[in-house]
Length: 447
Ligand code: 17E
Ligand code: FE2
Image 1 (tube, rainbow, N blue to C red):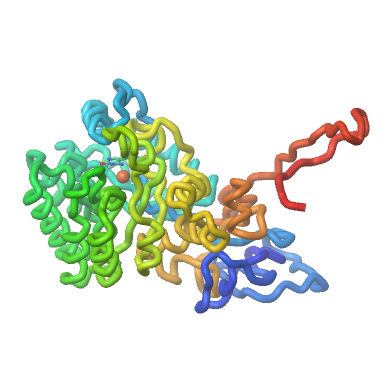
Image 2 (cartoon, rainbow, N blue to C red):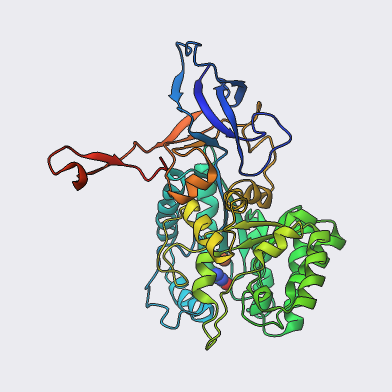
């Protein structure tokens, strides 16, 4: 035995392969990890039983053991460039793209690798072991793409990195946009991107989606388009993307990211769209930090909140995940790539605040995000035979993990401890007992 995690709480249904219910916790279990770095056995915890003498022992004391966090949408190429060469003064998507376009001219391999590596370190430390990053291909040198491809190989043994060839300034409207996208795929991008609402005309937008889907089919790749990221109720490319996904058979291999225009659609069109998206099998990724920041900038009051229809699409049976999007770049000056922060902000923005809805927000940065990346049981989940990759959270439930914004006590990747965060208690000198009676610990848990 390489490792044993004793007495961990699992999400209900985990440890078995079927019958999981999102976000609810079941009993306590021992998770045994074999020499191959996979989960060998999951057995009910017996506190009378002696722990094995060999291998790494982690005593969970009833803490929640979850499959690792999954980041379905980040931009590692632009990360940590906020203010370079100058800030995004208007706070719009459009100025962000213009500022990035200036910064892009100064990219070097070393610059991209240094910034992206730093953010991957932040993610690993917080238990994010699967990452889908967009990478701008509207750069004739494809410097960022080559750097991220190199990084994907460097981290391959402990993190999976999916790279989306993302044509930030267009496929049809940018000079050689299509050729650059094809070249990015040829060099090894995992996913084909698009940005139809940024193309010059509606027809260009439709054409760009046709090109992206055809390219994905040709190379057996997935699709993830920035789609309808605009407060314009006339921006309706998601219906085109869903229809292409349905008719091509690519279905759940296709994701529409942002889709903030859905926040401006009326009831009749929304109903039609819910039905179409559910039938198409496509995924949605909502990015609450970026879009709460960028959307509504052209509105007086009432001012739109800038999110897709998260609650409604979940209710319609569409898979929706939450992404972080930017970390300190022209579109968001802040961020630490913390998935529980994404879940917290996302659940407030989407009003997923009911007792049954809060755990759903946890699944939107774990299982639902894993579905976006196409991770199956051989790569993701707590079950016998799955990789021993998981996070031990100092909380008993997903709701508590989100409420207290905990950091994983341990992050384990393929049977090895990748990150450890020892508890850091806060001591309070609480007056009612009188000063001098000695401090008591405050940990924000409910009595
Ligand atoms: N590019 C884009 O088109 N939209 C975004 N939200 C970001 C980059 C971050
Ligand atoms: Fe994005």
